[in-house]
Image (cartoon, rainbow, N blue to C red; front, side, top):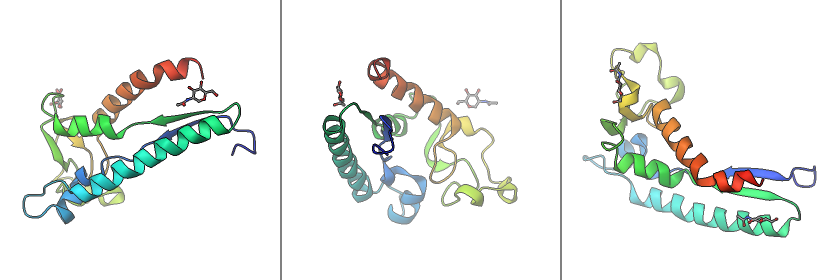
Amino acid sequence: MYELGARKFACLSLIPLGYLPISRTFGGGFQRNSVEWLTQAAVKFNSKLEHELNHLNSSLPGTRILYIDIYNPLVDLIQNHKKYGFEDSSHGCCGTGLIELNYGCNELLSSFTCSNSSSHVFWDAGHPSERAYRMIISQVVHNISHQLLDV
Ligand SMILES: *[C@@H]1O[C@H](CO)[C@@H](O)[C@H](O)[C@H]1NC(C)=O
Ligand SMILES: *[C@@H]1O[C@H](CO)[C@@H](O)[C@H](O)[C@H]1NC(C)=O
């Protein structure tokens, strides 16, 4: 992409994989605990990604490469969900909240689906709800605004 002329990049971190409802369902035992090894894998990946992006940023002349941390804002929402007005951070709103993803969330499940997705951190078993996304994005924009100003 650099060779083709691109100079401004923004790259998102991985999310805390072990906290996704689907990870809890398949890896968290009867209690649906968060899955520590998956979360640690994301932490390790993010630290290498950030390191590599900083390296590229300084080795490719004239580029600005931003590492955008969405891991920490999402962990904060999940762990302190009550503080942010969410009732649930371990189930998706859609369907049973345990395993449904993407097209698995459809009208056939509407009788199980929660009535207010804003009360859930997760919309489905793998993706945050619109309200959670909005909160993450406002924190991200706040965190990187000083870097965006001179991009
Ligand atoms: C990226 O490089 C620019 C100079 O090209 C520098 O101003 C900026 O601080 C660097 N960003 C990071 C995250 O290292
Ligand atoms: C949905 O939940 C949010 C967050 O708890 C709350 O602010 C909002 O009033 C609720 N909406 C309805 C229609 O109950």
